[in-house]
Image (cartoon, rainbow, N blue to C red; front, side, top):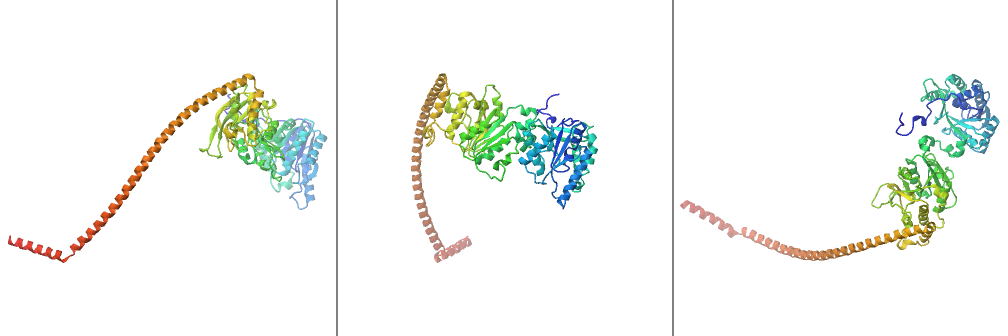
Length: 595
C-alpha cells in the first residue's frame, strides 16, 4: 500500500486499536469532586483491580459549592455517594482532602499533597483530569499532577481522563464488558443527576470513543498517556494543551530539525512578528521571546498571553532591565534548543513559507551552516508600494562589506556556530553588531543564498560604508568589524579579498567613466532643450502681442459697424424715402397701363 500524499495516516492522530488492559501497576486516582473518578476513569479502575493491582482514589474538594443550602449536609451526601460507587467499582472508600470547592489553588501545598499520595500509594500509574478541562478545579488539579510527576524520583505514567471536555486521546481502553457496572456506579450520584444527566452524557461519550475501533468494541474510555520523562524534558506542555492539535507528534514532523525563532525586538513590532511565526508551514519550530518591557502583572505574561496557545511552543525570557539588542540576541541564542536559529528584530515579519524555503536550501548540502533569503524592505506593513525595495544580495564569504546591509531576519544559521563561539559584540551599536555577527558566521561557514523574497523588514536604515554614514556620531567605526574579520582570516583569504576588491574598484572606475560620459551627453541635450525653450518663449511673446493688436482692431471694426447700422435705420425711417417709394410704385402702374 502506498503512503498517503500528506505523509501521515489517521492513526497518527487517534488510536485505531483498543487497549484491553490498563497500564500495569498500582494506581492513584485524583478526582477534583465526588463523581469525577467514576465518570472519567471508572472502567480503568476496574481494569486495574481485575489485574490484581491496588487502586487508591483521592477526592480533592469538599464539593459544597452551589448544590445544597446547608454546606455540611451537601458534603456528607456527596461523600456517601462516592463511597457507595467505590464499593460497586471494588476499590472501597475514597480519601477526601477537603479543599474548598472552586477554591483549588495551583501551589506548593497542592503539589506536595499529590507527591505524598504518590509515595504512600506506591503508585506506578497516576490518573488525573486532563488539561483540556475548563472547570477551574479540574484544570488546577491537572497542573498539580503534572508538576508532581516531574518532581517524583520514580518513573510514573500519567493517564489524563476526560469529564467535561473531550481530550485528544492516544489511548482508548475497551470497557465493553464493564459498561453496565460503570453505569450502575454513576447512578449513585443522585444529587448531581438531578441537576444534569451526566451519566447519559458520559455513556454517549464512551460510545462515541469506539468510532475508530472494531465493531465488537461497544464502549471505550479515552486517555492521554504521558511518561514522566517526557514532561521533565518539556514542562511547557502543561500550559499549552492546544499544541497537541496543531503538533500531532507524528514522525514526519518530529523527524525534521527543530528551528528556534528568536524575537529580540521591541514591543511595538511584537504582534506582526509573532503572528507571522504562527503561519509558518514548517512544522517543527520553537519561539523564544526576550521581553524587557513592562507589562500588566494582573495579566499572565502580559501581551504574550494570546500566543501561549499558538501552534508552536513559546518560551519567555524576561528581565527588569533594558537590554541592548546584542545582549538580547546572545541571551536568546544561549537558550535556544533548535538545530537552526533565526533572529527577528524590530520591523521583521515572515512570509508563511520563509522557514520552509530556508530549510530546503540548507538541505542541499551537508556542509551548509548559513542560509539567507530575499527580504522586502519598506515602510508599509501590508501592501507593496513604490517606496519598497528588495534585498537579494548573496553575501560574499571573503568580503565583509557585503554583509553590511543584510537584514536581521534574512539569515538562518546552525546552532553549532554559536557553540563554536560566535556571539554579538555587546560593545558595538546595533547596526554594527549585526554586521559584525554576520561576518563572524562567514568566517566559519560559506553562506548560501535563496533569492526568493520570503520576509519583510521595515524602518531600518542599512549601514553604509561611504560618506558621512561611514562612522556615525557616537557610534563605532566599521574598522572594528574589519579588524575582527582580519583576525579570523588566513593570508590567502585576505589576498583573495584584496584582489576581489581591486577588481570591483576597476569595474567601478569603468562604470564611473561611462556614467560621466552619459552625464556630459545629458548636459548637452539639456542645453539644447533650454535654447529651444527660449526660442519658444520669444515666439509666444510675439504671438501674444499680435493677439492683443488683433483684439483692438476688432473692437474698432465693431464700433464702425454700429455707426453704419444707426445711419441705415435713420435713413429707412425718413419721409423723403417713403414718398419716393410711393411715386415709384405709381409710375410703374402708369407704365403698365400704357402698355
